[in-house]
Length: 129
Image (cartoon, rainbow, N blue to C red; front, top):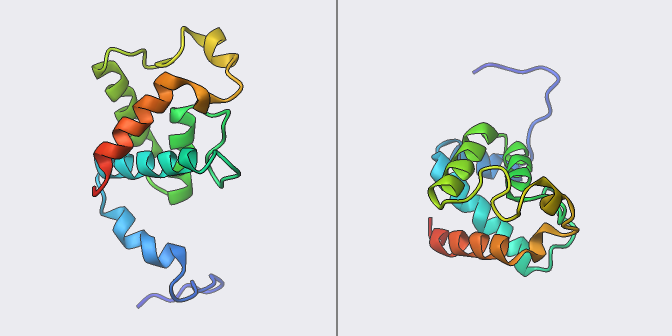
């Protein structure tokens, strides 16, 4: 076994110890399903203070922060989200707005009914994933 000098050991039962092996084995689709479930839970909880979610961030920014927090491939996650927008006939850049100005003027991305419906549909479809 390799010994790493100077690196602290994780406390038994820490978040990293519990999730690292399980997270590494998931597919992009499984990560995406978990992301939507967690994002919906945050919305249902009133969009309060959160480690990675913020009311000014849309789905892609939220997914990027979420992936970074879990040290998983954010690029693959964002690509999958963009592809799902296109398949649904939505703009890859501003799927729930009429361009940059419309998106920029949103003070809270999670009051947009189209975005909320998108997230809820994917979270409900992901339960049990």
